[in-house]
Length: 222
Image 1: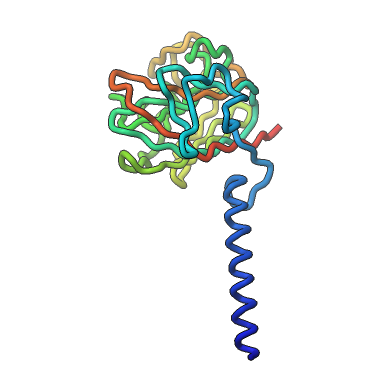
Image 2: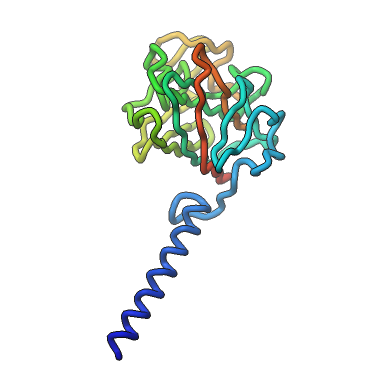
């Protein structure tokens, strides 16, 4: 009888632990608090969202238009998953200075390839800094980004490994990266906005291949 009660208690405890774990995952990475959904399910907190939709919990684009948050963010942690198709080309825009011009925002690349350049590969700071390692999973599998913006520092943890650590204050000249390579930005990255909307690039490139996003969570740090 004692053994039966002990077994029952252990089963109840295990079930409770599973429930707590599922709840924690829904709120953000384990062991953290203060997370919220980046977008409402009806996209009511997004700008011109009529070409985007959540389908079975996955955010997908209907055309090339970029989806922007109405709210501006400065220092924050952005946690999300994404999945690409063959020839997908998208990106996560950070701290936009002008949502009508994507080059006024920092962009973390979302790709199924290198885009012909190490500065265009997945997890690169677009046209500015490549990731230290290619951690991408095969086409059709889910990938995980944790992007942190804190002052001039931008970091990306890609599928569990930090692959980007950029100090924007090192970009002191327009059209030039710290390693001497050229970029297409008319303003030095050190002078980019430190607070602004977050965006997701729609169907982009010749193939217009889709990208899927899910579990988009943000934790403001300010």
